[in-house]
Amino acid sequence: MTIEKPVLYCFAQSGNAYKVALFFALTGQDWTPHFVDFFKGEARSPTYRQTVNEMAEVPVLRWKGQNLTQSGAILTRLAEETGHFAGKTADERYEILRWILFDNHKFTNHYATLRFLLSFAKTGETGATEFLRGRAKAAFKVANTHLAKQDFFAGDRVTIADLSLAGYVYYPEEIGIDWSDYPHLCAWRERIAALPGWVHPYELMPGQPLQD
Ligand SMILES: N[C@@H](CCC(=O)N[C@@H](CS)C(=O)NCC(=O)O)C(=O)O
Image: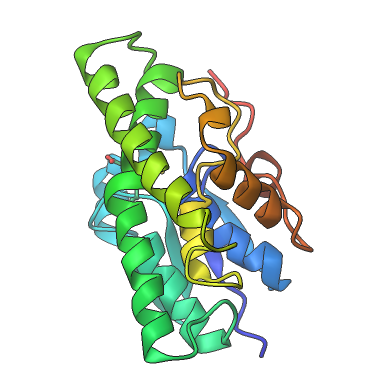
């Protein structure tokens, strides 16, 4: 099913936006990126809050006259409306939601914040980065253990749960987590990257390299 051409408010360094952009890349859906100058504070501006997203965040998907926000909610909506990467049974939909919530609360959250502090805010090592790394590693361990039992997060095929968890796993910035400690997570990351249509986030969305 073809859907009306959506506009994704995004920037290349945003793994949360990548989750949605990846959905479009893998499904062959036509979409338009709208660059948000996040590092110059655009997402926190009064205009953005009033007219784009009251939560002052990226991504936003402008689609069918609505501004949809929260990557997990956007992915759920896209899956429901197109059938792509959707849960087919109540059990599967429950499993997908469970992993999207885990991703937002534990996996993406800690990893992305650690990356932001070290690679973009350039804080150097602090108590905060040490704490976040510990939390990110704990989430990696949970995900790695789960993927020892099955190829994808919600079972034996790709769903939007995988797209959510894949948001930040292709960025090259070094933030003090050794991926070789998580072999099942590495194998899953490669399985996703081998899917037809897969594109790296820095090629899929505008804004890389960062301008001063
Ligand atoms: N749970 C949200 C997280 C979105 C998010 O944190 N986006 C970042 C950019 S990647 C942001 O806009 N952060 C602004 C802030 O935290 O002030 C989602 O999945 O969409």
